[in-house]
Length: 520
Image (cartoon, rainbow, N blue to C red):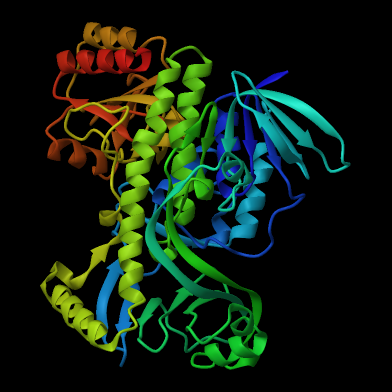
């Protein structure tokens, strides 16, 4: 059998890719060398794009007890002076979800893997190592299973989701751009004991102190994280010893108030792969890029990779698009990752300043910015870019994230729009009435692509309202469309706007441009 996809690596990115492949009906083999998930937390932050993706695959409700909205981040200089504040956007939320969350990775990973089992088109094999790939169309993959048996599998495409040390990338000797960030840190996760932690900060803190920059993060339940920069005279092994950790945390808690869940030393890097594709193999997640954690975007970047690529592979597999659209994966993702990584790097450089004079200048500059900025805050969402090129139109709003309103359908049911439409292309029409002949023309122009037509409506739900009519509850999408002076939005399955139009005639042309781009 020739698979549509072989996914190598079953961390959060690979498991999300496997779920998305299942949604699109792609014949998929998902592999991981390990036989189980890693039971210690690594990633701790995710954002509204990731929650939207998890909800698309039917996971949001399953993981609700393991995620918590992210609290504001306060940046404190020596002497506990507030020099910077990062807040979250307030409701109603642009994408229907709180902009940022903290989460516990092991149970979320277990839920991701369990969900894969619901898709008949996806097969999972754990304890299975990739020994060699003969790249072609299809590619031949030599595997060794947990019993030491070797066999060959074939796939049209391979997704390398095998982590920052990526054996697949290493074998191909693919170079990465170094964005010149390399700092040693100790990450400590603890579980508070009953009744402990009442005097801990209630929000997240970046301690921008020359003596030792460090971070405190409030996690779900009793989970708390500290991150400590390792000083030049310290060894990673020595500082990770329990007695060293207890000494570091004693500033906040006595040793008897918590149990150490895990402690690991890392070098925080900023690296981006120069080629995200080799023949029919695509690189995703940490295999393609490594982002410093100061914006909590490391895992989010990889989930965006999967969201960007899977629907394109599905359209190619269904012969609804030319294989050339797959080139847009790197064109779209590489600049987005680079910009986000540069922002995270800038945050890291702000936090990691060790020179007292430069730190004093930083404090003065940031305090002045804090005074001048409205309400003294900046939101994380304002720091994440949209798409700047690739498979998008040139019309206003193209490349932006499509807002997700809460809507009421023709049956009077209220929910997020994605839950009614699924993950597909969407042609969204404003609330102005549209002639039935024009609507038929739009629908014919969209065929045979998987497109859901959505008509925003001001009318109350009745039996006479067509099934594609939705009444928006909070005017999130209506406001977005008015601000861009458009009445039609064409949206990609990954929730990025392909383009917009001001009337039906322009909408027809917009759909035709998409068809031409897919057929290129």
